[in-house]
Image (cartoon, rainbow, N blue to C red; front, side, top):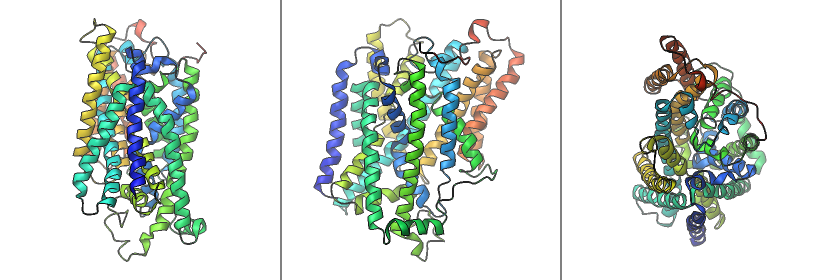
Length: 508
């Protein structure tokens, strides 16, 4: 990498901060800061969903899945579940989001069950999202550290990684602090174009650098079964099978895209449910195409590096041999083998994926669901000030998580998704209870959530069950326990039973 690459990278970071600061002039109320005054067009929301779902973890980790020893395209089975989940969300949840003026999705739980359920679900979201996005920040810092080390080979990689976490975290923090949710969405629209262009450019360079080109890469992929797509075994310890992908992926998407403020907040930036549904379904087609593309880049990296020619390949401890992990493969190619200028563009694309900040969503949840119940009579200016302060707080927390997680083993994609899946199951479960078990009141719903959390913690630490099943199991445990417990409590008041009931989509 050359000086031009650094100019492109840091120019992008500075541009993002300036863009967010410019948007800050429009943020006069909490509705502006959190929902963009509900005036964002559906296509921008669709692109924002894709950019949010992609992140640095996808950009770096998914190619590593196909590159790894025994890696293939079976990850796509999970994506098929993502598509099914979007259809269910469109029918089941989105119409409910536009009943009244919601700031967060958890306010629906308050209407249906009461404040305790809402606060528990909101607290789980805040914890899960800070951990998952701290890991995402770490991955981006690893790339920036690799860039610097390519200029200064004698530099201490650990020190540079720490400095990179702080630098990128601060840039993300300043941009979100000033710009609010509308700035996040419009920057993500730009980011989508940048990282798709960067990925395509990297793929073109890879094909030209492989002896024999695309034909040779496809031949190796066939020889090592890289294009293997389906695994119909019913093995709960396998991460990517047809059943864990379709069912587990469906429930995972129902939780992340249907009951998680990070993505639901984007739907609320539109002015009606039909536009939110179009945005969500459109994003599914784009996501499928890009996951295929990132896996294919992993195949090209496998053909480029030829790890199988090393005598120690079959017995190596790391399945991503000669790298310590799959997350290191694509960054090495970007920093060591891409031409000047293009290398800077692709690194900027990785930063683009990292800038899908969750800080505004976490602040929205913390203010509306956790702070307002204790300070209910303040004016909107006060809540806007608290929102800015909490944005700073959560930014520091994510930087701390990234620093603590830098020595973790395994794929960051699996780490982040397993953490998200662990927490999202109980939350999705209580939404399903509220939708289908109308008799259930707050106490049995709370018992169901707590039982699910305890069981899923045991599953996470003491079993080998794959994370792709976590949301399905966690939500079912919540539903079953809440239903059984409901017989020991009075039924929910009639006025609260229909708050989460499915409704037809209208233009209003």
